[in-house]
Length: 442
Image 1 (cartoon, one colour):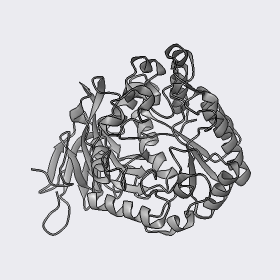
Image 2 (cartoon, one colour):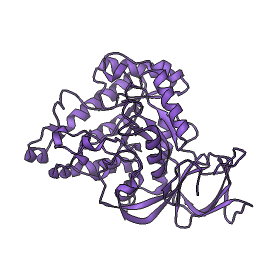
Image 3 (cartoon, one colour):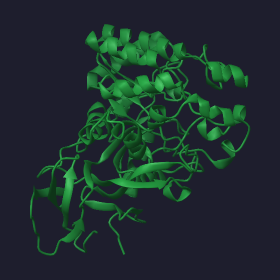
Image 4 (spheres, helix red, strand yellow):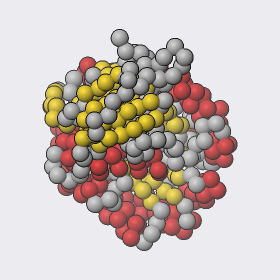
């Protein structure tokens, strides 16, 4: 809670297991972690009993669609920020497919200011690679990098940078300020009219298929371009077994490539398309069980660097229609860590320290975002989440805090629960409830 003099309240968290290790106390004061240890006390502090809870550094999502400006019926920066806080996030990277597209310094600075005004998380804009995301000429990469938003990640997500010459030029350009190109790997010619993963299920349903090679061929091309140029490449929402192998090969060669997987690609398969429920329509599509196993193994062995949500809100009418006409995308901020627990922790493939790495430290490092993904030690920013891994409940519409309800997990039991979120020492989620305004509890 913010005090009358503008300072934040002092908070004493008792008995939290930092990244799943031994339980300790933490004192949050002045926006930072003032002290950690056992048996701590602080006069006048607000005391939070965290016995049985895991303390994670504030989660960082490298792939969020906040829709503002232009598509506020689906989401706004405020509502998306509240959804992020509910999921334990303290920073999100906002994708540029807005209207106008975030391809100029003016637009990214507007997004930054709206995020600051909301106050729930750091909203870090991602700039478009090409003007209007049309793939024809480079956007104002340098101006966005030099702007107050200090953009370091550029992507045409939703569209592939399909022209190899433009992709090469983009990779060359961002080297000057240590930027990264985040590629939506989808060959547009191989996916014309595609409705779901190409395979046995698409053949049975008579739906046009989205073949794995459409993703894998672009990744193969781009890792070679990144190697040739000596620049950083990030692969968005990797989804196939073949893609994992290409990234593994590229890393062995020393290519500066990182990759992300979404929670839904860690858990869900194309079998869900059989019911024609458009909540399960997404790009890239849900893949085969073999692909799910491969991306889980790739995340576990470090081939895949991070988990990113690809949170993609849509109004009800965009999903409540026949499958071919429905929009691609799922909301995922509120459910992400719970799905990762189900797919990776409860199966023994990751530890909670690994979760802190793939959902906080590494995405912050890839995006060059200072002040996030830091250790939960004295002197570091007080951005963290307290998570109850022993909880379990059916995921419901009341768990969603954005403007759209297109979650694939509604009605499904998920483990875990984010109990508290702190953003620079300010409470944004208290006792499992998102506050109306940061720091203002009843």
